[in-house]
Length: 252
Length: 240
Image (cartoon, rainbow over the protein chains, first blue to last red):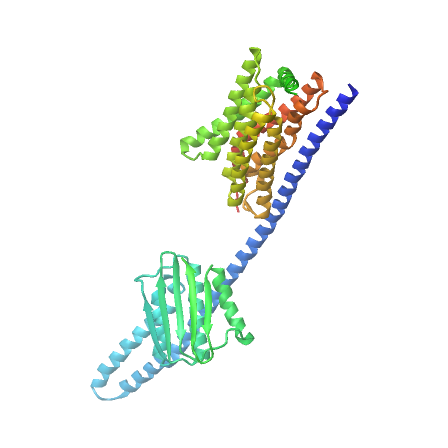
């Protein structure tokens, strides 16, 4: 009987020990999972804050870019046209009044167009392909270089406004880089859009650069981090004296 | 050996009446909980195959336990019922459940291989080692326990390894509850069934204690399996 009790004790003890062991394993997994949840929540909050910061920066930069464009337009375009109108109207010939009226009408058009671009919601309401066309028109009008815009699909719609703003800023930055550093004779933008992805290629035939060089890395990394913030990808393909191709892919 | 086994299964059943009703209540409670959940979800068309499988397992257990008790009360041996229904069919059903909840292709493959091996072992055990009509297939149960425990451990381990369900607490996931309770039951239950055949000198009173302990854990398991799908209802809602 004593032996039996010992056997029973051993079986019960083994059973309880095994159950205890499994319970410890389960509790350990719950604790590890909980810790990872806390870490993950913290990481998500950081990512959110980072994204909001990116949006704020982008909005600020777009505002600055717009103001710079407006000031340039006021000085170089509208200012010049007003001076010309003044000269024309000072002319005592009867035809000069008609000429002056024409010029004033043109100035009114330009001012309307400018006021539209200052509007806070203008970019949000603007279609992305229209924006690209306008940006290239600006370059073309400035006489800096030729431009070419091709797009396969009729309408390109980016429903997420924040995504659109960041993408617009990235495009502006790429065009600015081409103007400032590449000295191109032609800038080409190619836009294509599938059901799930937007494909945008910005190419120039300028001096090009070595993407692996440290000095060029910071600006490009900034563009890369902005594209990553909206789950997009950006690639730079360039060689010295062989132009540059910026390839952007964005899930929509 | 065979003679002793017959005696021991009979003894284990004889020891039942004391906590048998509680054990049966546990099974029917689990069945009622699972059925209520399935019916409410059926109305909304949201019930899944896995939920129905679990409900089927509990229903199957309720049926064969009642049939085994009926046979016992008629003075007949019920070893065959336990061998076929508990040691084999329930094991295969639980493995099917584990197959369903595991997303890893490799794990699923292992489960299929294990099922084939287990079936082959069952045939060998029946033909050469333990008579299916007279002796509890404890060696088979040892293998089944090892398999179920391993796959449950793997499932729970993979939750931590792959950072799954990071958006909700683990206690709100039914499969976590189910695998945990299967792990706890099968890691200890095999000792009881092994002891039925292996430990020669146990007397009736001692087997009764072991049987009660085993039934207590099994009853808890069926309640948890039945009610586990209510777990997501207690998930904290995010008001942020």
